[in-house]
Image (cartoon, rainbow, N blue to C red; front, side):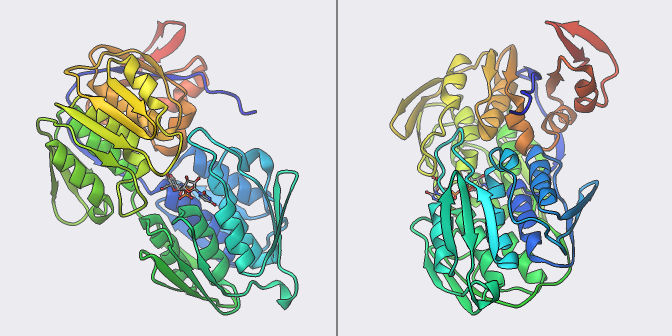
Length: 452
Ligand code: UD1
């Protein structure tokens, strides 16, 4: 078991934010594209890779397979010319669902892959049946034994065979796994009811930059014409639309005008539309820049859906926002079955929320009040940070290992905008890492606190 991080975030709420924030590379693109680098027997240079725990875990999986990885700032050099092992390590796969996605490229390159089942996680059971059935359709024999998925290609020189695959649900991960597997298969593959998320398109663009033949990524039917070999690439990943969305909500919830760049506004269409309905203005300032101009907040209904619907990864942050909106809102979570655990924590801060099945009924309150709360998953932790920024008094958030999985330097970025936020850690060495600019150290509740 990994050592639990004992750090907490302490936020003094009701401070206005101001300024410009830089959006990092997309976590979900980075993870899929790192897996995709396994397809390439030559050098891959990946740019704009965020520094995150999830990215470090994916690097560990690739290293364990024998891939050479070097990181310098936000550039990751990956060389998978020789893949020494076909089995991914359980200790890491169990902590990072996305590392299961290596099964597609491994199988395509080696004709064999053994990857532990990722297991359940805080937001739901998240099975991999769609990945498995798709690989079987591509000609792989797949067995699950003792918690490990064993996949082999018999005959045809270990090469997968193109096929027509219909996904029962447009799963992001299954679309990515199968698209990667099909790039090196013999013949044409069509994935129907494919996921259309921007990260799927980014992965397709990355594969195409290596010589793969892929059409239709970003629509619900992707056609892949297998090639024998891919070649070296230098590729920059897209900005993180969920991080951008989180900062837009930070502006709205603190009534602050913020400018974000770089962003691809088209990737944020459902998020921007809801922010406008709730009473804010979101202005595209040309190129890759967005400005949020906050307004009076009013309630609205939200239903999470596969892209281009409203993203489940923004549900918790919008719930934090709607707790302070005038009137009632209904939030319906359709993508994951257990993604409302932040409700109990937001309620501790004075929010009025009731859960009925997959719906949360949010009655707006005039003010939240700071409280000690626990982050239950990645986006829930972002929601608590947002609530803490708006709340009266002090909010202390535990469970920061969730936040560190997916947000690069969140507290530094917020601090630069004027937020009163600090990480308190009982480990002085970690504290130095967490808050490099800390100049003064004071004692606080047994934690070592850098000055605000
Ligand atoms: C990806 C994102 C995650 C996001 C999610 C939905 C990455 C690394 N993570 O996760 O941030 O919240 O998309 O946008 O990209 N399902 C099955 N069988 C399968 C696969 C999925 O039943 O074989 C179900 C899942 O349990 C879930 C739903 O489909 O209920 C959506 O999952 P999926 O789109 O696969 O999400 P991930 O790829 O895991």
